[in-house]
Length: 132
Image 1 (spheres, rainbow, N blue to C red):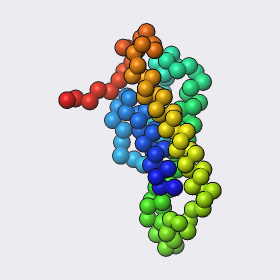
Image 2: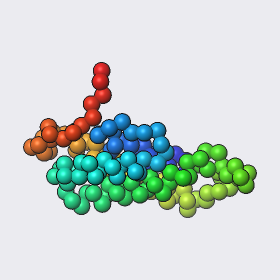
Image 3: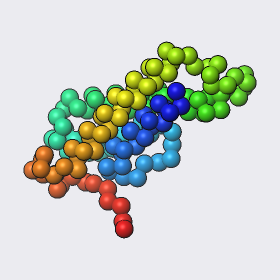
Image 4: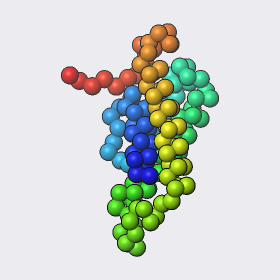
């Protein structure tokens, strides 16, 4: 459960990192929404309008799983329940499925965003570059 939450979080942060340095928050969904809003035209031009829904699914998964980060790590500190007493197999399978989908979205986004031959105006994308 915890690893799936982190996988979704990091997948969303991979998309964000194409535009800016992601925050240290365990819920990057708001940041992704900002990035999509600010770069909507370039994203639609490269991926098509329908791809925004695909990105938003990853965003929603991050928002849904983010509150679980502490509980998957420490358990419920109020009721003194460890993580394995909070979550069952169904919870874990659902989280792992979300992680797999979010990873695929992030992988395809990053690969295509940085592949200039796909879009004739790829050089006009606002890309974040790390300084050496």
